[in-house]
Length: 100
Image 1 (cartoon, rainbow, N blue to C red):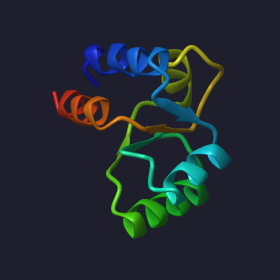
Image 2 (image 1 turned 60 degrees about the vertical axis):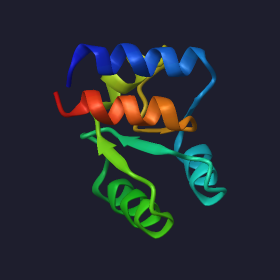
Image 3 (image 1 turned 90 degrees about the horizontal axis):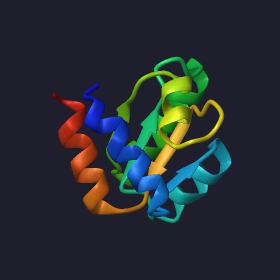
């Protein structure tokens, strides 16, 4: 991942546009408030499948982004497996930087 991706994720967190934790992310997806969901590469297969099914149903894009430690560090928290972005602008930019 481009270092700008992680910086942008931290900026989104400071702007209050990031939800983390499995239950909160699932609730955000169900309310259709998530614009992008990030899943750690080292998340359990069960968690990955559950999230992939949810985002497919609600037509929300998702990315596999680093590991749980990178995700947590980027948002200034302990390790995190799931993160939802609730702002379309941040979501678009994160998707753009994820491919570089």
